[in-house]
Length: 234
Ligand code: AMP
Image (cartoon, rainbow, N blue to C red; front, side):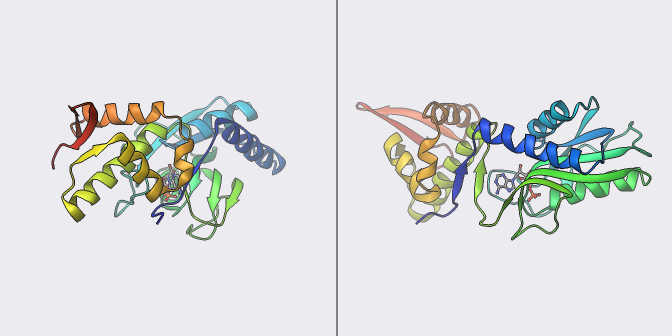
């Protein structure tokens, strides 16, 4: 049974949504003086918005909320509070990729307003999950009703690494299994995350496993002529 449904997002989707979002903001006749990208998901959308709208000023705030793909931390927070900017009197557009719980954008907005109460702040995202979000961003390109985990093109390796880690840790807890062949892992990935995951180019699986090995999460062994991936803490 699929545990976390995922949907692969292409670069073309991103460019289309960013262009739609820019069109809506321009139509509203509220032109931001500065864009605040929420790190890290808001980087690419914010950069594209600046390009589409002719905005030069782009800064960033890091909100930590999803420590790993599809797993929520207890409380979202600003990792590096800003020191030296002055946004009072400016029209500030806060941008993220998606408003899911809504916590990240809300926290970023509160942070900006608490430091610069005279800022004119609005929020925008490529996607808004209307059925779960705590609030509706002022601008969005695309409303999502059925929750899925979107695999954005800038996050494929990280998503796969997190999914693999979760599979290996949970299966270890359930049955003590530590050694996995590539085929077993691929089958489990599609069982847990749906067949959509099989559309991710296979080279990303190699990158994810290499990162996991570098970070000491897995070891790679060869038994006979089979390559095995072993959970390091197993
Ligand atoms: P939020 O729950 O609205 O605070 O989302 C925080 C961040 O987590 C977003 O900016 C995304 O980078 C990531 N995220 C949350 N939900 C999803 C989702 N359904 N698909 C992909 N990324 C997500």
